[in-house]
Length: 318
Image (tube, rainbow, N blue to C red; front, side, top):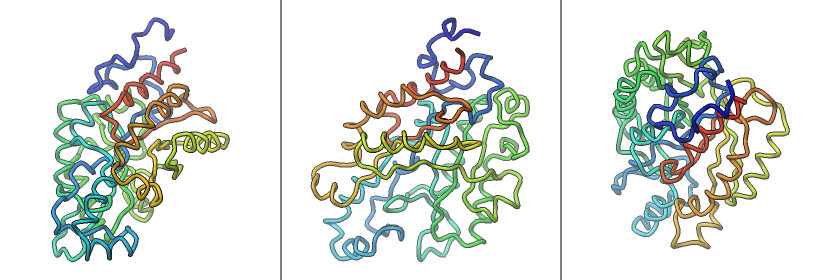
């Protein structure tokens, strides 16, 4: 099938773009497709209440400053911790198919409730968000999501068991076991819609519905040009065999924050998106070394990020 005869994939309805892909791509492994992803997907509901502590991954100095200078410190934390502004359903409607989910148990919490975190903890629990995702999947039966559970904070083995039970009860027969061929045609035939990547190797080895942790390329740069240079260097190596993520999310350092006191992470991201997306349009999905698979970013509903990533799949048709 010639790519010239296909409609522009960027113009597909983004809430159901997988089901509208040309049939020539139905047997292509998902880890050879270009898939748009959401970095730190559940930060739109960070707890703005002062009762929420700073998460324990933050530097000791920041935790101490927050304790004694909360009215001054908290606005900075929120401005630089929020990576997505819209609820998960909106992100999925916009075409996101990979979600970076960072799981925590809040300190001094006697319950088994689990939350997401980035700087502070979220108001929504993991169970609430997974139910929202399940409801969305029920309405979109041919869309497939890759959920990456990682960066576990404060989870005991018992809480890992709670999380696994929540995943199972949320998605039931939609969970794809790691024995299956990951093509759209196969997943549609079997009714599987959720691929769960899990960072905890001891759990992943024991449970057939938990896939191995997906590598995440993180450049740790606050300038677009430096990030691109780092990724071009990474691309010179051997392509990972399965799923992998190129995270075009920029990382601000303390120096950058202090020299840009009136700005936010969103200001930084949106100012650099033209450069980053220009680079993304040049990328090629597929199995060859140098190709990309999942591309994840911040504020993914605020730009043309998702259609640009989806449109890369046209290159597989030529």
